[in-house]
Image (cartoon, rainbow, N blue to C red; front, side, top):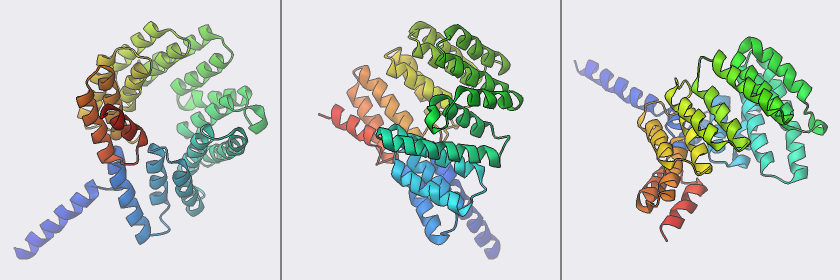
Length: 317
């Protein structure tokens, strides 16, 4: 009996540690705990490419590009045939480029293209890799390898893998050409083929935001909120869109609370960021005390999240 009792305790302890694994911590938005766990894992197993990739993604969520790049590059060095590692390295190069000088950004853009192309080459059926590569081709100038024709080629392949994503790429191409009628047609086609998925409605909302149709933007967000949410990040992105455009703060607050009270928080929408956005909406409504509490909650999960610290300092004056 004593042995059985001891074994049961060990199983329970192991379960507790499993519940606090790095991917679980990242999904819960506990990025500081995730970084600590990953650093311990790397110290114990220095050749663990998966740990380096997760560490990169943790720094990515904090906008700490240089630290993230070092970790992502290490992951790729350790596992050069892993498509996902190349994809994340390309993504963080891209974020670094967005905050860099023109000449630095140009050099990084070539690295982004290289990593995305390798990701697609290693995993030709990866929808995420092809979508990111298509977006790069669409946004980047020709001198670093961009081009609408290349984006169209990716859309053609995506049409077989994920028709909704293909319509999204085609919509972005039409936006670039300033053909907003054709762009809207593609966004609505994505809604139709996805059977009204919330992500497709959100993309239509972002399109309307871009061209200054804010009533239509808000209507599309309402559809997204009531549609089937296959990707919980939609709730946070929809709330952020309302906040950034100064529209319907109560609806933004409701979306964020719905997300945070669910059991479906995800790495793509860190809980610490959702708390920060909730604080922002509450602050804009004049409730500084409640806003401060949300900023503190964000910082308890991610002490390096500078935007939350700046906001807390502002409302505490």
